[in-house]
Amino acid sequence: MASAKPRIKVPKSAAKGEVIEIKTLISHKMETGLRKDKDGKVIPRQIINKFTCSFNDKLIFSSDWHPAVSANPYMSFHIRATESGKLDFSWHDDNGETYSKSADLTVA
Amino acid sequence: MSRMESPSQVSRRHVLVLTGAAAAAAGAGLLPGIALADKAGVEAAIRKAVGGATLQSGRITLELPQIAENGNTVPIGIEVDSPMTGSDYVKSVHIFAEGNPNPEVASIHFTPTNGIAKASTRMRLLKTQNVVAVAEMSDGSVYREAVEVKVTIGGCGG
Image (cartoon, rainbow over all chains, first blue to last red; front, side, top):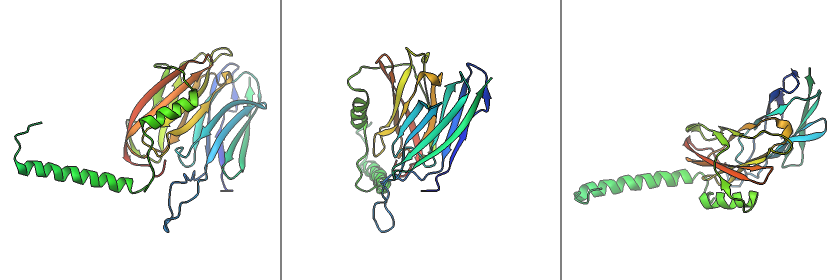
């Protein structure tokens, strides 16, 4: 799943103290490890098991995912904008790969 | 229920019951040999996540459809009532499903920077079941909320 494509939606700017919503989505099949192929062989599990978000290198939000999280996992959450900075998002795949994306937030 | 039914009515009921059982078995056949989580499984998973804390009610709002047509992607929103300050905030919310192959769905970890303890995602539900959310506060208190979701077409292998 080297083609996992992360997408994020972050407001470009926010007022100081404002709580803003952040939306994230990544293309990934989230293979549960419970399905069988047509020959009856179990298709091995391969999911994104962890999602993290840091602001100016400080972890501010994370989530552990199990196979019950849908394919192309979506996650939305909020942050209180106190200063301008950089948001870093990472998705950790069972296969050891990490997919990343970042965004700048300007606080007026 | 009347016990004065004629034999023909009883046998008709039996036929209906058997048909239902066969349909359920066919549904289960999608995932042969996989045991499903249940209330006890979720209870054990909750204990694993939060230890022996008392589960209080309130503070959690769960946003889930009453009826999910497609169990492969059921939107879930959670919000926990909290000031989200440095000394009083929601640490984690764990989501469980009583009728999936595994009880765990996701654990969400907040910090005071989040401003509000509110998040949403999408989950798989194999069949009609209760979805349970458990919230751990920074002071060690724990809250629990559950909502039943009716699933029309189950998500395979959630």
